[in-house]
Image 1 (cartoon, rainbow, N blue to C red):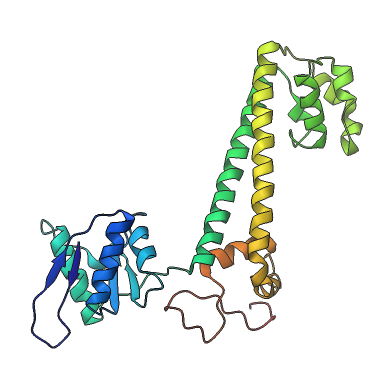
Image 2 (image 1 turned 45 degrees about the horizontal axis):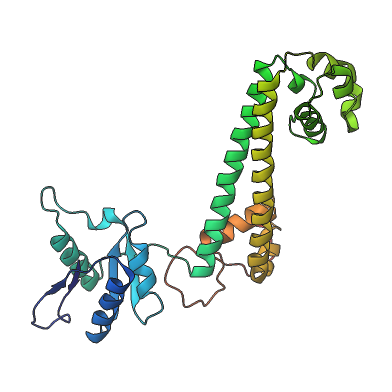
Length: 279
């Protein structure tokens, strides 16, 4: 539902039109708004459903405002698409709306990639926990010797188990690094009741874990490539105590990275002009 008001201070008719949400429908909406020579457009933020309209209007000469639904909340019992559209238009005309922050496409892409990375890390943790629980059902207590069940030594032992090895002596011989000092404890912890079912489940969980790790690695490579234009900002952010490269990536993806004097819409900005740590 699109509502267009007459120019402020003039008499005219309020015009409303309804469009579908397919690309061609939204393209016709854009053409109609251009024909009317509209310059300012406000829309309510509703989940992800505002994105198609925003994308088709972005970069087309309009000043776009995304509005928090709480700011244009309807009175009880008086909510409808027609009323909502007119109320938003009136609020826009009166200058009563505050724009929500919508970053430019390149920042939006970084935000999606980094949020997806966090989702993958969560999935990886879940798989790690499944492997830990599977070990418990087989009375294997390797976590008593190895704090990281899927570290270098843990992976070597898991791979041997999947291949059919069940000798505690041979499995504990696969320990590496400082864990070799715990070989006796590890040998005792590997005296369990692993059977073919456990091996099948362990094989599936381990392959899933490896696949997610590969996805995370590929994702980080792509994020690093896309972050190259922001290397100066990342360098400055890392001068802040506690901020490493990954934290800097998230700050830029969530807040943007504009320099002073940017012409972007008013929004939270990451202004990086000095290498001095924040007080």
